[in-house]
Structure formats: C-alpha cells, structure tokens
Image (cartoon, rainbow, N blue to C red; front, side):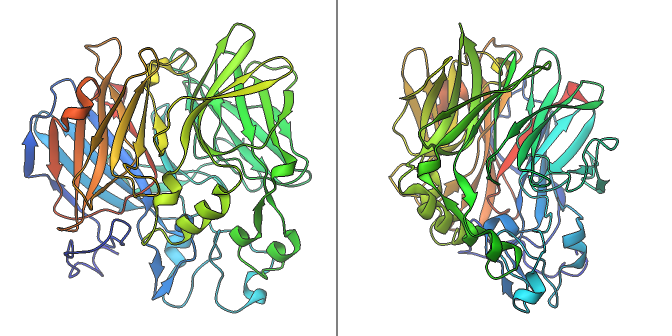
Length: 474
C-alpha cells in the first residue's frame, strides 16, 4: 500500500479530521514546541479508521473503516512517529471491485450479496498492551496481534483457543493495576444471546468466567471493573428488525433500535466465580464507562450518559456522517450510577458535553479523584476541548484548541514522581494546514495548554481509542 501511494501528498490544505490517510510513515518529528517532560517516556498507540472510502465507494458508517494504528515513541531524543494499517482479511481483499459488509455498509449487489453475512472485522476500535503483547481490537471478532515496534500484523489471536466461533472480544478490556489481570467480554448470539466474560492473567493465560444472559441480542460496548466484580450496564440497543438484518435487506445499523421500554439490565459478574447478580432499571443510553468501585455494599460505576429519549437517532446519524457533523456524538454528560442491593440510582456529575472518559489508571477499581474527557465547548459542537473534573473539589478545568481545530480522546500517562496526576496526550487536527499534532498536557495545569507539541508532517484521521505503554513495561 505504501509503495502504491507514495506519490500522494502527505497532507492537503483544507482537508477534514476524518479524511483518509492512505500512506504509511516512519520518521523522527522535527518540529517540537515546548519541552517533552523528562518523566514521560514510553509509547503512545492510537487507532481508528484510516479510510472511509474504498475504490470510490463511500463506506456507510465510521465503524466500517480499515483500522490504522499510529505509534508515538516518546524518549530523550524527542518523538518518533509511525503508522500502519492492520492487515486484516478485509484490508487484504478490499479494492475498487470488492468491499465487505459492515455495520452500516452494504456490499454492492443487493440483498443476495449481503444475506447471512456478518460484518467484516476491520480491527479499528482500540489497541491494548498486556502480558508483553500488543493487540488491535474490534468488538465483533477476534483481536489481531501486532508487533509493538514495527506495527506489523502478526495474525488473528484466539488466546490458545479460548475465543471460539465468532471470537467476539470487546474493544474495552480492563486491567487491574494491583494484580496485572486483564478482564474482558464478548457478545454471543448463538445458541442464545449472552455476554461471555474472560480473565487473562499477567502471564497471558486466559480463562472463561461467568455469563450475562440477555433476553434478545443487544449492543454492549464497554463495562467497568471493581475489586470483586465485572460491572455491566446493558442498554436497550437491540436488533429491532432481525429478519431484514439477516437477509441483507438493510444495513445492520439501520436494523438496530433503542427500545426505551425494555430498560437497562445491570449485571455484576464475580471476578472469582459465583452467580451473576442482575437488576433491571430505567433505560440508560451510554457507550463508555470511566471506572467503577465498591462503596460499602454498593457498587458505583461512572459513565458518559446520553439523553435516552433522543440521543440514539442523533448519535447514529452523527457517526454515519462524521465528516460533516460529528458533534452529536460528543453530547454525553458524566454520571455516576449507584447499584444497591435492590435499587439503582443516578447522579449527574458534570454538565459539559463530552465523550471518551479517562482516568489515572492507578485508581482503576477504586474511587478515582479526577475524570478526563474530550469535550465540546459548545452544545452540539465538534470536540475541541479536553476537560478535567475533580471529584473532591468539584473544580472543572478545560483546555480548548484554536477555533476550527478538533481533538480526540486524551490518553493518560502517570507521572511516577506524583502520587496522582501526570500527562494527557491527544492528537489535534489543525484544520488550516490539514496536519496533525501531538499535544502533551500537564493534568495539574490543564488550562495552561500543552507543555509540548509535536507537529507531524502529515495528518492522521481522528480515530477512536488508544493506550500508553511506559518504557519499563516492555
């Protein structure tokens, strides 16, 4: 791919934050403003759809683009940048004559070309490091193992046969900082709908845990982890038109519906065995959880909640047309859900429209002091800010980029010299130049802006999620 498109310009003035980047790069960043902190050493990995068109065909949904990983190596010599597409089966086959069925993309050829076809695994949603391995994730299928240095695709991963059939493995695993264990889940449809949970120990050995039964196939994107439980909030995003989806009569996202009357299923799966505890509560609409912790007999989980009455249709249209209007996808608010023995209650924490919550991961499974998120400075606007909400003082700090620019999820990196706090790293799209820059911000002085920026020679699409791996972790 790199050789075929080497003549393409690295960036085009005036292009948008989701424009494709067909080229693959590997270089040392020359333009650095400010000073890269001496205590920030390691690699930032980010992933998202590298292209939303194939052979002139506009893909029908942002979730259908081929996954592209970006690697920022931060060291004494500065910042190095590398990007590579994940060599999935879909990537290998996609051409001007063929595209796979996706979440919102139908294959050319009508229903006969789409009937009984599952979405192609484009491995574009998250990239995680655990037990010496690096994996790109897409929640409908198996992970892909990548080389941490070169980003070369090693192959699909089933963790010694633990992932079976479709091998669904959520894009949001959680790691307990105390034990080093990674927990995750996958959606299973056959022979009956359920969430199946997994534990992978610090050596890489993975086992199956309990399940969460579902009354019908539902979409569940994320979960949270406490000292004793995996915590699930399964919202009523269900397949409302299963026949049309199966027969290929319509795209899968058009067959999903938010059925508020079904409510949200709350499930606590014990980490070390035992029966799953299930409660039902009023319908919640969310995608991402920040964290969870136990407070006496209660479990508290923090999420970014959207308006259950209207947000599904607005959100779905926004992600289908992300190049023109992504703002609705960032209209959630930080809330805390308290799960008691018999009842569930909700509390709004902040009113700033936001998404992609983050925390100091040293506090995973415990009450965390601060929540960080990508935010919109205006309701319905594009993500142009990074916000921090202090849960002790109630203080909220915000950094906003230049008008017309956008930011993505801010990844946290702990400062080993501080008990709490550290650095946030986000990628800013500079609209006027159609380039991207890496922002490094101090969590204690967020409103002051970046302590360092690394100006890329090219742009990279905004992307979804990522992770930071400190130098000593490998």
